[in-house]
Length: 149
Image (cartoon, rainbow, N blue to C red):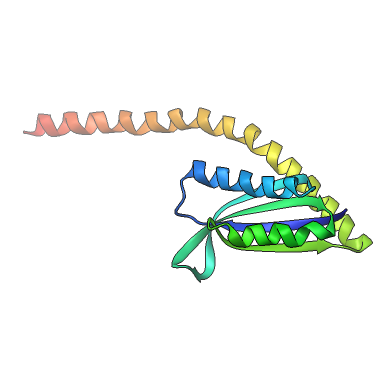
């Protein structure tokens, strides 16, 4: 089994649930053909370099996997049939240097998948404190206008 990276661009017209279902279907295509998914990296909605089928944006998702080389043609055929995909690319990691880079990217993707859950909590706590300050400054202004009349 060789190491591969699949970058897929999903149509932006789908809802968030439909995008996630489409990504799960893509992962299912890989696993049903004997592949093992090492890591995934959702890159999110991004602007395309040029419009594709009148779409200016697309949802990017990277899948790192180990697959038998004979299964790649079937996986790419199923990607071409999928109407939710704007584009896809499959990259093979062959030499020892490329495999070392692949392993580094897999570790980075795994760490990135764990990190966002820890970062989001402090941001939510700071938001109420920021909204209280403007409310206090607006109240005296209204009182001075009423006294001037």
